[in-house]
Image (cartoon, rainbow, N blue to C red; front, side, top):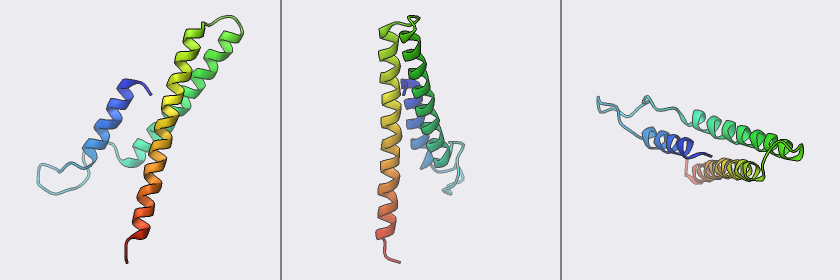
Length: 101
């Protein structure tokens, strides 16, 4: 994940718990949780495809090793972010299931 995408994700998370000017908690202009999850998954998919493209170009002699390593590193970071979001979702679900009715 690139630094700009990480900053946007952090900003979206911070804005999710904000309060409207009227004092009532509710939806804000920030994207919802489902949007955040979709963006993380889309980013991981895009980064993985970019890494595959770089690898293919390098095998064909059209790319450099540095570009391949950079693309793979970016894809790895995106995948780790997606897994971290997944782990947090599972943890939140487990906490909800432990709550008494």
